[in-house]
Image: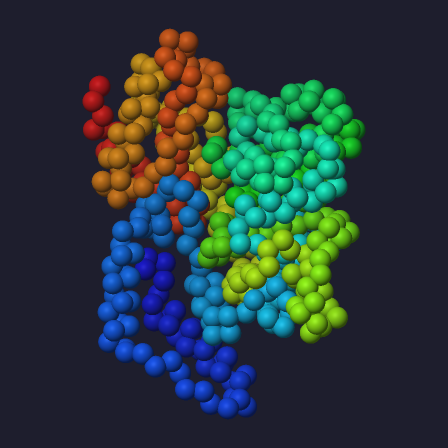
Amino acid sequence: MYYTDQDKFISLLEHGVNKLKEGFTDLPEVKGNVYSHDKAATIIGQLAEKMHENYPYFHPQYAGQMLKPPTDIAQIAYYLSMFINPNNHALDGGIASSQLEKEAVAEIAAMFGFDTHLGHLTSGGTIANLEALWIARNLHPEKTILVSDQAHYTHERMCAVINTPIEVVPSDNTGVMDVNALEERIKRGDIGTVIVTLGTTGLGNADPLDKIVALKEQYGFRIHVDSAYGGYFTLSSKLDENVRAAYDHIKNVDSIVVDPHKHGLQPYGCGCVLFSDPSVGKFYKHDSPYTYFSSEQMHLGEITLECSRAGASACALWATQQLYPLVKQGEFAAMLDNCLEAAQKLADWVKQHPKLKLVIEPKLDIVNFVIDAPSASVSSQHAQAVFEMAESKHLYLALNTLNKSLMPEFEKGYWDQDKVIAIRMCLIKSDHSAWMDNITDILDASIANLST
């Protein structure tokens, strides 16, 4: 694959397999599975061919969704752990991997500035957010949860699952939660938790957490931060002043969600939920008479909604964080800075292009732009055409339907419909900055094919 030196990859994997075998030499020999090598080779070949039907998510010319290739060490650690296939529910199902999960999660908590924490890995951001909102409901069972109209749709779905009222707060014309509208809603006195998004998956912006923390101090609600996509950017040295101020207040919130399978270089699925107050663990209490007998230590299953979970995820994350520590000015942080640099390069190119208009200045690594046209409907048609033309040239984009409130500078005559389709690019790979000339050349050629 593009990112992998195959010989080095196989050498590292072989080294790990041999080292793993050394720990179990005192067991009686068991014959391996008996199967036809030729038949297995045929099946694997068929699978490889079927995988050709995917977009090349690993390549810098894929800039559509939030798909970041897991680093080699994560892939090898995950595969190596499959020889054991640990289950991080009870300690007797995943002794080593449970400890690795605790260590890796503690490093993430420290990255966010939590002095104390309760947390664990999940199968992804949706389940992590479900747990955070479930705790919010248990703490304030009769109160409403607030969320921005730019937040991920999972929150409304998960509140329906836990039967908790949720209301949407409008965003301003930069796509972040309108603090004035938020305060007006809070004044009614029935709000238990406010969900703050760092950063939003559509526009890549960050709600003003610093201002919302100030409201929390005045009105006394809880704050949950959904940073499934953007959490790791707290390590970046290239955030603008307002976004930096938001990230600097993460340490003052009640719960956080981040997805290591996005910017954390992990395979799917690997999410993480953190609580600043460990006492919320009391809500997880349950009885499992045949599960928690092997140790007096805390079993991860005692603080999770999920039961069986892949210990392989913990192994992969722990190994990655050993190679790339979660520290500012480190190698991992530099990768994040490269993503921000790529977004700014693209935004600057868009602003110079005669046929494009930037929606908002990128705050993280997502860029949205529209095709300049006489009307929103024609602009939307052109965006679809560029999307298809770029794909034919092996550049893979995404589309984003945006409300006209995000583009107040457009003249009234432009708006023959309330929404417009924008081109959305997620520059989540560290290589995107170095590939920007290739990317913009293909974009330019795709735009040139538009009919006037």
